[in-house]
Amino acid sequence: MLEFPEFIRTEVLHPLSVHFPVTLLLVASLFKLVGIWIPTSTWRQAGSILLALGVVGVWIAIYTGNLADGIVSRKICDPTVLKSHENNAFLTAWFFSGALFMDLLNRFDLLSGRILRILVVLVMLTGSGFLVYVGHLGAELVYEQAAGVNVPSEDCAGF
Image (cartoon, rainbow, N blue to C red; front, side, top):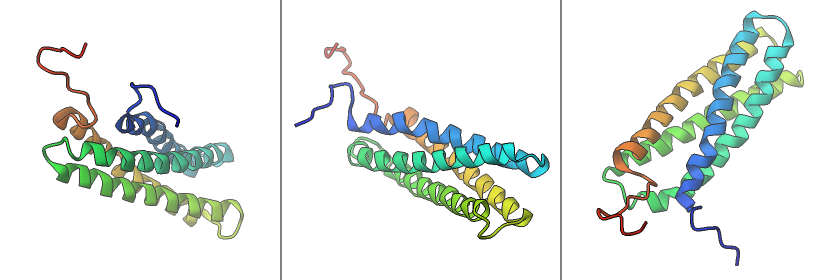
């Protein structure tokens, strides 16, 4: 059976996987927004690539978050924050997945036009707002409730 080294705990996989999609999706939103005003397609193409990578990453982050949930939920004081973090993360993932779907429709000329591009950006900006809120809730879980954090004993005997 494959065993991970002791320092790779299941609940640690989530913070390791969450930071790339956060960055990718926020930068993708910025690039798509700039692409509305600057007519060259470079901004839009870069935004599309970042959006696709970010959507894959956000679903990986959801998966690793579900793995961590069973471990972390037993150790925190207020599980409602964890549930809100999870629910809003799903909304975020679906907003960006929807934006990617619309972007692909535009890319393959199944449905196109400036209005669709603007709608993609609006959905991405809405998703970005949710993304920032999910990040805030995640930080609250880690820094206020020590979710996924190894809290040593008072005498630090484990070191």
